[in-house]
Image (cartoon, rainbow, N blue to C red):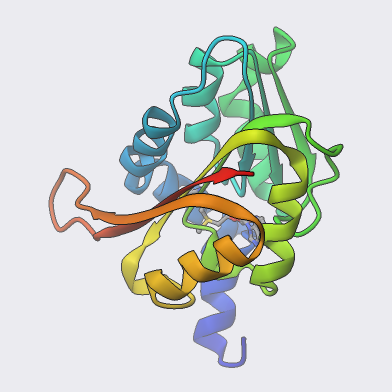
Length: 198
Ligand SMILES: C[S@@+](CC[C@H](N)C(=O)[O-])C[C@H]1O[C@@H](n2cnc3c(N)ncnc32)[C@H](O)[C@@H]1O
């Protein structure tokens, strides 16, 4: 990112750091909560399933996933967001039902075929290597595992059909896309995608 404004946006919301990152985390925890919870409800993990949340930011989706699944892993490259998620998810972490780790979509650090569900909200626009990231998420999902993504439509890195094409090219099947209007005042329409790992 080149301009000063873009650098500030990255510090606040991209890979949050410093004071601006902490402020960005608070805003995201409020403004993106409905989308985080919506994606967890679409993925509908069962009590036996393991969920990987990519780029959880302040951790609202982690809390929702921990309520209905066996175990949740959150990977994020931001120390500030990992600290915020640790505070929000303290009871699930203490109960051994949730683990946080430094990582990215393209390098989660998780073993092959080890998770049942991958969810990621307002994140795909930050992945520098989309094919590499989807190959990694395919690698960590068990056969039959589900992938659910959501992002503000205006921030998508490519048009939704092109994103679906990239997901299919990584080996996913049953790729579906749609848009969703979050509740509330002046909501930003979300583009969402669901897919199944072959
Ligand atoms: C815009 S915030 C979204 C956070 C939260 N999911 C939400 O919707 O409120 C983006 C998050 O993704 C993380 N992130 C940035 N680049 C990433 C990457 N390549 N892989 C995974 N996460 C990334 C950031 O550190 C940050 O926590």
